[in-house]
Amino acid sequence: MRRPGAAARARPEIVPVKSHHSVAGQFGWQVISFVFFFGAWELAGRWPISAAFPPFSQTLLALGEMIADGSLARAYASTLQPLVIGIALCGIAGVGFGIAMGLSRTVEWLTLPIFIILQAAPMAAIIPLITYLYGIGLTAKVLAVVFLAAPVIVMNSYKGIRNTNPSLIQMCRAFLGTRRQEVLKIILPYAAALIFTGLRLGLAMGFIGVVIAELLITPTGIGDLITYNSSVAEYPRMFATIASLVAVAALTLNGLERVERALFPPEIRGT
Amino acid sequence: MTMPDDTIVEVRGVGKLYEGGVEALRGVTLAFPRGRLSTLLGPSGCGKTTLLKIIAGLIRPNAGEIRVNGRRVEGPGPERAFVFQDFALLPWASVLRNVAFGLELRGVPPEQRHEIARRQIAEVGLGGFESSYPNQLSGGMKQRVGLARALAVDADIILMDEPFSSVDEQTRRKFQEDLLDLLEHRRKTVIFVTHSIEEAAYLSDQIVLLSPRPGTVSRIIRPEIERGKGPDEIRRDRRYLDTVDEIWQILKQYVA
Ligand SMILES: Nc1ncnc2c1ncn2[C@@H]1O[C@H](COP(=O)(O)OP(=O)(O)OP(=O)(O)O)[C@@H](O)[C@H]1O
Ligand SMILES: [Mg+2]
Image 1 (spheres, each protein chain N blue to C red):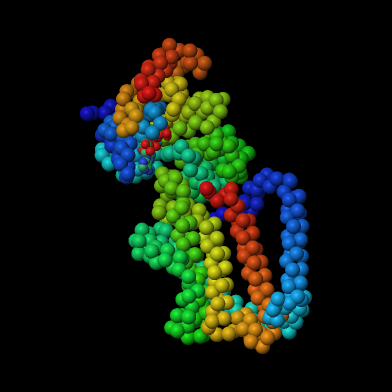
Image 2: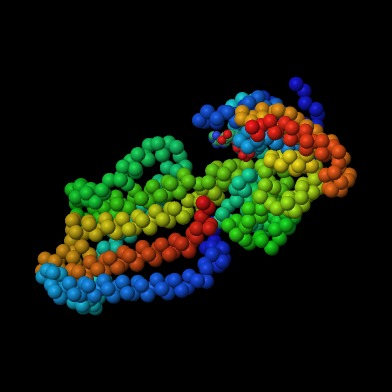
C-alpha cells in the first residue's frame, strides 16, 4: 500500500546539517554516562555493599562464561518460545480485534470497557491465577504473555482506526469509494503507524510477562538462570543474566522504534 | 414552485441541525443553472460548507431535499466532484496518486488514470511535483492537488469549497480565468464557496448571499457581466463595480 522508499525520499531536507554535531556529541555523552555507571558499579561491588552484589568486572566475566558454555543462548531460546507465540497470537488476533472494535460500533460497545479495565489493571497479578488454571506448561506462559501484551496492542489498533481523519473518509465517500475501499485505502494505512507502536509496546509488556512467568510458574529459560544462580549463591552469574535481559530488551525495543520511525516518519503520518 | 428547464441542482427547503443543537441552515431553497458558475457567499460559520456538502450527498439534511437533474440525492454521485476546504489529501500518497485517487476508487487501470492525472497536474501548474508528498507542498499547492483530483474524474458539477483561499493573487487570477475557460469549453456547472466579494462578482453568473447562522438565503444576485472583454476591462466595468458594491452593502450589516 505505501512504499517505504517513498518515506526515505520524503525526508532529506528535514534533517538539518547541524544535527551531525549533536549526534556525535550525544554519543560522547552516552559513552561517558556508561563509563560512569559501570565504574560506580565496580566500586560498589568491591566495597562491598553486600556479599550478593558482585562488581562489574566479575559480572562481565560470568557473562562471558555463560555465553561461551552456551547456557545463556539455551536460556534465551527457551524464553523466547512463549514470547514469540504469545506476540504472534496478539499480533493476529489482538490487532484484528482492535480493528474490529474501531470499525464496528457494536463490537466497540461490547468490548471497549473490558479492554479499558484490562489496560489499567496490574496484569502481573493475574499470573498466579493462570498457573492455577492452566498448570505450569507452555500454555500458561503463552497466556502470561498474551494477558500482558494484548491490552496495549488491542487499544492501539482501536485508537489508530478511530483517529482516522474524518475529512479523508468524507473525501473517499465523495469520490464514490465503497466501505471496503474506505477501510483498505484510508483507514488501515492511517492506523498502520499506531498499530505498529502498539505491537512494539506489546512486545515490551510480553517480555515482562514471560520473565515473571518463568520466575513464578516454572523455572525455565532466563527465569531459571536467575533463580538457580541465586539459590547456589553464584551472584555474578545471576547479575550477568539480569543485565543481559535489560540489554536485550532495551536494544530490541530501541531497534523497533528506529524501524518504526523509518517506516512511518512523522510527515507522512497524517496529523 | 417550478424551476426553469436548465436547472441542474435544486435545493428545496433544506435545513440542517447538527448534533449538539447548532442550527446551520434553515429553509434554504435555491436553483443552480446548468453550465453556470454560482457562488455561495456569507459570513464565516453561516453554513456554506454545510450546504455544499449536503449538495454533494456527504451530509444528510434534517429537512428538505436536493435534486440533481431532477433526481433526489441520497448520497454522492459520479456527476458531482468536491474540492475540500481542508484539501483532504492522503499524506502517504504522492501528488500523482492523490490526483488519480478518484479514478483509482472507480477502478480505472493505473496507466490510464496516471495519464489523466498527469494532464490535470500540468493543468493546475504542478508539473514536476508528481512524486512529491503533500507535506512537501505549500497550502496553495495542496489546494491545486485537490482541484486537480476533482477535475480528473470529469464530473459535470464541481463543488468547490474556497478552492483559491490559500493561493497568491497571481495564481488566484490565473485559476479564475481557467475556471471560466472550463465553463465555456467543457460545459461544467460550478458551485463555488468564497469569502471574496470581488471573486464572486467577477466569476459568477449567480451569487447566493447567505445570512448569518442559521443560514438562509438573504439575496440572489445575477451580475450579468459581459464576458467578451478582458479581465482588466471587466474589473472596470460598471456592472462589476455595482455588483461588488451591492454585495458589500448587504454583507456589512452582518459585520456588527
Ligand atoms: N460536524 C459538525 N458538528 C456540529 N456543528 C458543526 C459541524 N460542522 C459545522 N458545524 C457548525 O455549523 C455551522 C456552519 O458551519 P459551516 O462549516 O457550514 O460554515 P461555513 O459557512 O462553511 O464557515 P467558513 O466560512 O468559516 O468555512 C458552524 O457554526 C459550525 O460550528
Ligand atoms: Mg466552510
